Structure formats: structure tokens, C-alpha cells
Length: 533
Image (tube, rainbow, N blue to C red; front, side):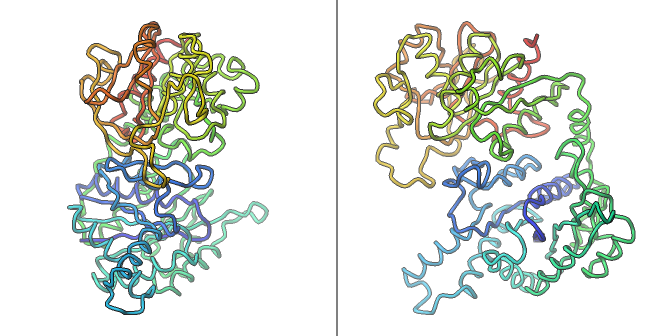
């Protein structure tokens, strides 16, 4: 088993997750079986209770784990199917250690960071290595080198190298090489300091992945090599991509990263087959058509909050030789100034998931605009609930219809809390999570899009369509085209008299891949293309 640890220095948000995922792509294209893992230093047990403004999107796995958004990159960039074992936080580690102490597993010993916390970290890495069936485990360490909370993870890796053999481990350090415009030159000192901090901890990087706005010339590469004690060929330029993040694997391959990794770890030295990936990137960069799609959300100013949705639209567009022009629309603006001002001229409207009542009336206005103007509409999770509320109010005449999440005393609770959620007190990891099956109505639009009657999709919600209103709303033209196998939960709705209006209770964005776009996103983009004026 070979292990690659990806660390970061100087500043956060340098793209460690993308670097790890891209290396996974390159190794898979060489025929190497890979697994990916994220070690996050924060004390939350998982990101499920964290504000999107702080942490971005919560990515949900098939087994119901709420994880870091980087796991979305891992699944999109590789063939990996991840589980909760692939995302470990300090909160999980300390929780486990303290539970063992309470049970007496440590036989009365004083419980310390070394060896008990570091042993638990190493055991998580070993267990995933054993169970994954992979030849290489790529493990990203969250945070920045030197952060206090990250020290136990780096110490665990230092010990781990000695235990599995230095030539079976590799440290890739992602760092910043800033360009100082006033001086007209790149500066290597931040990277030197970051590597020095890493070496103080006992870790020597084997390669540098240098984030930079300007190309690294030979003099800069030599200097980084000298002061970081890595070969010149292991100084890898990772300049900002011009068009799409999917260029990153190709750029890193052109820099020789995968070849150097294979040489160092004694992996098969075969040329990667990147033809399919290159075709996809070419379709993203040079599409023959373009389409404008509005995404109406409450976290619009934070790009990472809807990361998987934006990527899924890109995948769908590329498969149709179409570029996506996103019209990012704050739901609160629609509340204040109306939908017409912001949505006029778009080819499609997408309303994503979310929690809380802020911006809800703006999202309802977006759903009404799409319904009335016959604009293609795709609602995801809350986006389905919004569509139901709007339809109940403005088509069925149910004045004051709402969700009990936003208005507990609503006279028409067309959306209400799931039966199993009524007594739930703890917020973390307690929603209806993970992959659940659904059965699609024969000859419905959803059935036509999927091409099959039984599907499995990932969920993350507490509230659901109130089946007490089913008969009434169906009479006005709402189609419940997807139900849980026992028929008690609504999974997909459509409008009978609309060219393309579909919403689902699940999150299809978590199963879309670059060369295998999700059918709902592909169907939505295709409808936007065919119906745009």
C-alpha cells in the first residue's frame, strides 16, 4: 500500500482538495486503483451543523455521511464511491478517544495527544487503506501548516511514515508563490517559511505544488528546490486555470507530477489515457451553444455553497455541447423587487436546497415566474417544497399555504415534518440522509429522463410533501411522479401543463460526474436549450 499525504501552507483555500482529486484522476488514467481521504482539524464532528457561509456546501455520501465539500471533488474526479470512513475530523477522533477512556479501554493510563490521539488517527488511515481495495491512498490534511489544531494530524503522519516505510509514503505540499506587482517578480519566501514550519514538525515534502498567477521561471524553480530540499523536477507549477477546474489534471500532468509520483513510489510507469478527460475539457471550453440559467438561492455570494450544482450544470452542458452562463440571483432581491426584474430573459430557473425562512418568499416568486412564463424549472430539495407551496397558494387557492418549517401555524401545511423527525432534538447527523430508493410513475417526464422506473438518490431533509393534500393538488395538475417504494413519501413532482417543470426532494447534484452527467441536469439543460427564445 502506498500513501500520499497532501498538506497546505502559507494561506488556506489554495486548492489542496483539487490537487488531491486531480492526482487521483491521473493515477486512475494509468490504471492505478486509488482511494481518497480528508482529515479535517476542526472540532465539529462533521460539517452538517456548520453555516454555509463558514464552510460552504455539505456534501452527502450514499451511506448518509455529511462531509466536507472536497469529497465532492474526489467523487467527481475519480471512480471512487466514498463512505463516512473517507472524512475524519478532530471532533470524531476526540469523541472516539474519550469514549474509549470512559469505557476503560486504556486501562487507567493517562490519555494524551501522543500516543492516544495520534494512534487513533493512524488507525483510521490504516483501516481505510485495508478496506478500500486501492493501491494508493491519497490523504488530504485540512487547514494550513502551523495551525495548532492541525498539529496532531501532522505528528501522526510523521509517525506513520516510519511505520510503513519512507518509500511507501509521499508528502505533497501545496503552497503559494505570490506575484508582487510593484516589484514585478514572484516571491519564494512564503514557501520557504511554510516548508521550514513543516520540517520543524518532522515532515520533509517530496514535491511542491506551487499556486501562482505567473509562470515559474527556471531561476524561481531552482530557488524553491534549493531552500525546500526537493528536486527541481518536483517543483510543480499550478497556475490559475483559465476556463475550468477540470483543466487541473491536464496541467499537472504536463508539469510531470504523476510521472514523478509513480517514480518515487515505484508504481507502474505507463502513460495515462487522458483522451476522454481531454474531450470533456474541450467541450467545456469551446461549446457550440450557450444558455442562461438562473440559480435563485440564499447563499449566492458564496460560490462554494452550491458547488456541486454548478459542476453538475457544467457536466450536463458539456454533454450537449453547450456552455452555461449562470445568472446568480439572491432570493432576497426577488422578495424586494420581484422576479421579473431578475429572471426576465433567462432560459431556465433552478432553485437549490437550503434551511430557514430567509429569502423563502423570493424563491416562491421564482417558482411562480417559471410556472406562469412556461420557463423550464428544476427544484432541488427545498426547491421542490417551494414549488409545492407556490402551486398550493396560486393554483389551488389555498391561502396562507406554507411549510411548518417556516410557519408552524399555517392553515395549510402542504409541507410538514417527517414523522420520524418529530422527536429529534440533536441537529447533527439526524436528518433523512443518504441514498434512498424511489419508484417513478410510468410514462412520466421523470421516467422518460431516467429511462427506468426504480432509482436511488441521496437525501438531506427533515420536511416532506404532506400527502393529505395529494388528491386536491393532483386535481389541479400537480403530478407526483416519484414516490418512496411504500408510497408514503413524495420524491418527484411535475406540472402536467408545462413544457418542463420538475422538482425532486433529493439532491441529484451529488451523483453527477464530468463524463457521466446526471440525467435530471441533462434533461433540464436540454429543455432550456430547446425552449429558449
